[in-house]
Length: 346
Ligand code: NAD
Ligand code: UFG
Image (cartoon, rainbow, N blue to C red; front, side, top):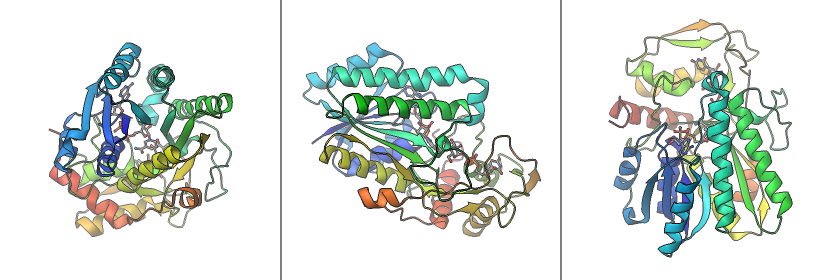
């Protein structure tokens, strides 16, 4: 049985992916600093699988290289060497990154450099990295292909971009050694259908879906919609929302692909290739939950794009990955999690 290190495995996408990888018979070792998550996420993952003994957790920060070395050393000592890494750990709030760029660069970039260094020291050269659609230059050329022009417009995006460049440099320098895949997520939402794990934002969320859910449970009175004058069919911004369980499955497939093929670097968009406007998302949420979401229109948000939709054909061609879950399942599963856990993992 292969052991996989999952950094940031207590987080939203990480916890769903841990479950997926356990069910696919990997041993999972999670490292997480808990800066934006709770260890209870892994306790919930354990409730959803009978492979509990294959999951272990080390609390620590990727910026602490001695901690990382200690984890790799201990695992080797137990004859449990790491075959590959799924690297989620990072700070992810775009707005916050504009106020605290140094914190974002330090956490995301320095953390990744340490991780790569310790991987090299242990001859572990397989990594799946959590990237983002935010690295694409704003474009009207839709849907967005992996080959589209790249440009970051905020510090968070810069950290993703520079990490992709670092991974690219490693692949160019040692083409016979590294197996690398950056997965560029579009807008992951929803939750596991059990309602036991889901997104647990510490502090006020800024993304639309957790905000809708917080209006749903009454924590926030009214949703603000950023603009009704976009060039879309109803004037509100259009995004490519994708169920987190579909994202988790793609991680298994990308990892399996890397482990079974020759060393290479290969990047994929993870989206449904379908656009949904803010108003359509609210309407779907109201329809499946029967809960009214009061909203008001406000000015456009600085730096926002009109329409962002993935071309996901490469992931289908190379990984045989197709997202299976509908927008109504995203809303239904997300709401089950939020209504069962109004205060998150408490
Ligand atoms: P999340 O905040 O729920 O999970 C990230 C996890 O990483 C958290 O558990 C956090 O405690 C941990 N972490 C952060 N810095 C760390 C460090 N230095 N050392 C150890 N652990 C650390 O976020 P998520 O939504 O699950 O996102 C996972 C990854 O996917 C992130 O890298 C994020 O940038 C990327 N991503 C997310 C989205 C999205 O909409 N959720 C979109 C595109 C990309
Ligand atoms: N929106 C509102 N009101 C809000 C929040 C958002 O109307 O309070 C709108 C936005 O204007 C946009 C849509 O809802 O039209 C989605 O906004 P999000 O903030 O949820 O998502 P973004 O697409 O702007 O950004 C997200 C992540 C980024 C990631 C990007 C990838 O936050 O990290 O998806 O496309 F890079």
